[in-house]
Length: 398
Image (spheres, rainbow, N blue to C red):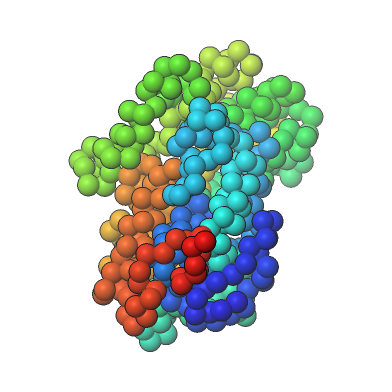
């Protein structure tokens, strides 16, 4: 690979150089899922040299490894990255494997320089250059874009260690399908979208309880006629009204972190019809069994922690985190550390920032900032011109 141009060859199922040679780059993008690929698209469009590092063995694996029956909650027309619509009918809801294949095809179509199998474990700075470390490999860069996404370290309550060892327990990231479960009851802890869908699936062969606060539900059910009519309005609201720049957007951001996302596809009546019992929050353990806030103890054989995620930026050895553990930034630009950027975070700019179809706008904003005169440094002039990201700078149009 040419460390100056950032060129790399994609083969469809993996990069030609999946391990990744260390080197010096203008920009290193950490994370090769939708956020990182969208940043790569916009950097390539501006003719800027870069490399994308991803810890998975194959582009899209972050999606492939989620539970088998997962489908997106937004229709395909709102799931495209910049420059390439999602290749499904507009009102369909893609599976997680279709999303993974789309991301892989996206990287191939635009010849994005993704190096797979490179798990970054440290980001620091030496002088005026960033140093990205992946084991014993070292990548230097003038700019770094952290695109590792919003869902990082699974959140599991400390009292989970007190659960009887004969009870099967797993986080939702480890759940694939009901074949992993023992015979007997199932407690799903966390009543958001993931928890509700997993509980509904588990109830087909197990007595199932869903523990957690009611997060409410969206006004329409995905795929219905009312949903198709209302979706354009909702998408405008989550993209342009609910932003960090508006009072209502900032209020929703605070509630979003505290309360969670309203249910999209599953309704309370669906769970009741399937025999899923909704119960209060799980407060702890008693004699190795889950204890609810109301004092009930559930004798179950399985516990699935669908309790979400916590930010995990401990690998960034720079003073850029707030007291809540989240990066301090202005629309992804870290003012205290020039040259460092974030994309793909919850409410980075708007409620849609964390969605596949919403990440492109934030990626473009970051790429524009990187290409600006105060960030360009000594980039050769031929790299500053916008280029078709499907062709390296200077290639012929035939």
